[in-house]
Image (tube, rainbow, N blue to C red; front, top):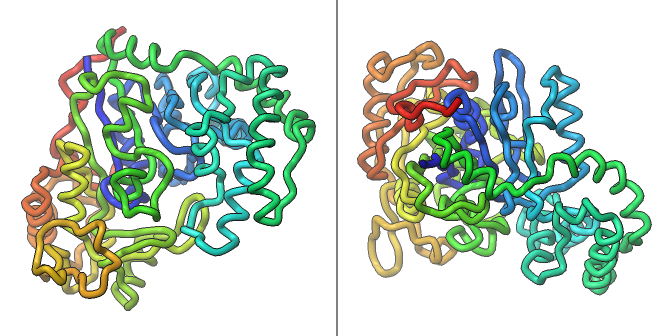
Length: 433
């Protein structure tokens, strides 16, 4: 009776989509527990690239039940559009395998409007402008619209009218025009007809699956350093991206979680504003961006790139309780003669090996690097650790020792087959019939 949590251990974009997709070969149920369409997961199946933003990555595996948990915020039009796009590409019958928590909150057009207006003015923090923050604001101030409200259009309209009334001063102040309830309700009717059959008590569904001995995977969005409580505030997302959020967002007890797998790139990236102490603005940074195809799957924005930050990774290991790591994009480092890894920080109070998360914008706080040898071999065809160049193996060992967490999976390319498995947390537990 247990579940495996997969969580980002950096500022998001760590390659969770590929790792989750790979692990769904062994999972019966895949649950998204936080965030919304601001989380684009890129999957490569054969030579085909597929991007999912709301639907769990496990949807591409036939027979896998996928769940949008109550901790998520769901844009109805994006959800239906994503289903239609995937079915148009040959993935049939998705709605029959997809459950949406009736307690998940909805992202509606006024949330997207407020998000866009805010990002166009002073104080922008680099959001994806998908309405995520405003939807969570509605949730917390108890003016939110939940997916279950789609079952009763009269109740839905009343909830929308109340929310619009609360948002009107903000929209007016920001120079926007608030839509009317009638404008919003017209497109909601056909969306409700398609979404209502997918609604269910997701908390009970997930707990029942665990009790039945089925293999359950809880899929996070964004990353630890974007968590609302544990990230580089205020440049964070609006939900708990850490592993602790998996229990809350999926509606199960924390004792149901058996393993927490953290995803980290072999280097570091970030999208949007906020501190990034190991950021590179040179030829090495350009190499990481171009070879790693570091452009946002949702926004298309170029990602900021930099060296691996071990203090930050240790921080992520602690707040998530990581059991293992999936190391992605090791192949991107091929061709770099010397590699640097941040091993500590110089601060006005002296050198520290801790991640100074609340001091990153303080003058005089600088990363301390250790250099390691690089390699020139292309890694995509290697399938065991021993086949890797000695310098690549040394880099992995250095990371494991510095983070205090063993590597379970190694990604040496974007395709499913380009994965080296050192330990699989799903093996050993058979699925129920």
